[in-house]
Image (cartoon, rainbow, N blue to C red):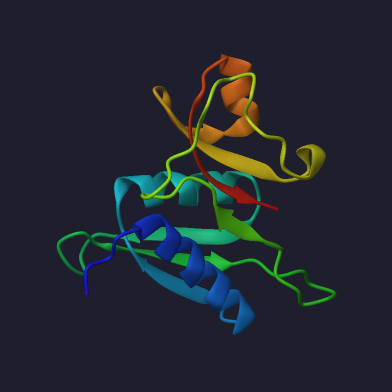
Amino acid sequence: MALTDPIADYLTRIRNAQMANHKIVEIPSSRMKKSITEILYNQGFIEKYIFDDTVNYQGVIKIALKYDPLTKLPVIRDLGRISRPGLRKFSGSGEIPRIINGLGMCIVSTSKGVMTDKEARKLNVGGELICYVY
């Protein structure tokens, strides 16, 4: 089976692992997925991550999901794809959407790398809107 949208697959694997209350999820690696994982970690949405390049040609990303210690609910409430292979969504620095009035974040692929919506606005760069997380 050919995977047409690897980023949508990445987001779905995280979503499914959280619904099944898994602690760790393994995802085939790519440069874009590594960047998204680092952003999720830096923003406090996931506990830990490891890039394991010994498994196969492309390697895997092992992500330790984060849950609230009191309610046991996942920290990531919702994550979804914005730009898809069939319909790319680009935005200038001024038009990058605010997710839940700034409480959530949008991950943007810019000419200066993959970053959050806040960083893109600060650097005044636009790009492809990859996904949203809150």
